[in-house]
Length: 190
Image (cartoon, rainbow, N blue to C red; front, side, top):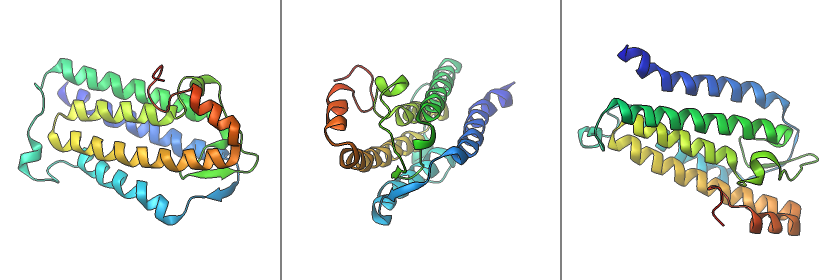
């Protein structure tokens, strides 16, 4: 039974990854891409954070200590956050359609999407991923996982800045209005 529960979160992430790879096929052609320096500015911290989050004993014994009481209740909190976050990211990814890209890009005939989850936050994919990553850290219950989450969050926040610049350049006043009306990551936080 313990192995079943320990397998749930990795299984959710694997199903999410399969969907992510398959759905990337429907993306529009790229018109403009961020520079390699900008890409490395978010990819390197995200890789480092992912290693800390996902690889046991990578940072030494001190960071393998638990940061909360290791109970089934805490595991369920983490599991629920992972499931909810991954579902939100999938819904947002689907809503974005062909405008989606793993890198910061502008697509041919790029559209400013303001409906669905994009009416609640400007970056719902990242909101979902951050919730899922935090849930993973809670379930793992190791300081290295919590630090990994923080490093991943920093990489995503850097990437948001790059995306915001692209969107302002492309959509001008329309994006400025959207930005003034809709929070970046946390719903209802103006």
